[in-house]
Length: 111
Length: 113
Image 1 (cartoon, one colour):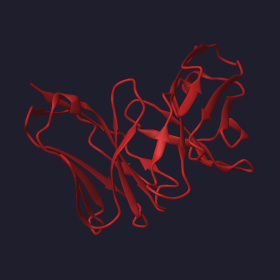
Image 2: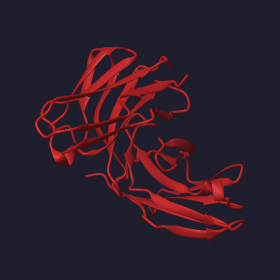
Image 3: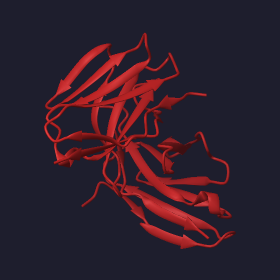
Image 4: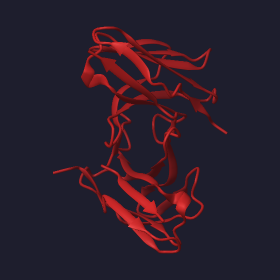
């Protein structure tokens, strides 16, 4: 059974700090990796995706992928209170047709 | 207007009742999905459809059925609701190519008493 593991948190960081969210996965056949943000009571929205080993940056967000170690992480620089949400990691064997989600990490950014 | 809509947004029902949750989309996507979300368990796939004549079971299809009435409409039914089907249900769509993003509807909160 494919598994995607995340620390449920809450992860608490001060405003302006770097938040580091981690995710591990069991299926070595996974090819694409996604980070969704979900505000309380709302639907998930995609913030980052990564396919290749290494780092991918988009504004304050950086996704990091290490396929050999089967982990993917999301760094949020200059964290803002508006970043407070649950972050869902999802992996796919096939470019996103079928996603397996982790349980999510709740991030709290404190002023 | 929202691209992916779900009705109803909230529903309280009793054990044994038949319930239908509806999803409509204006994104023109051919791929549609139904997920349920329980606290701490992320999203789990119930059923998915890649076109009108294609229906596939997901990870947790037992107790559920679906109907793809048109490219834009995908309905989820609980034939005889039970309390452990109390959850938040999301519909999602995806284009066959491009960014590979799944777009989620606003969700339906279902409570089975």
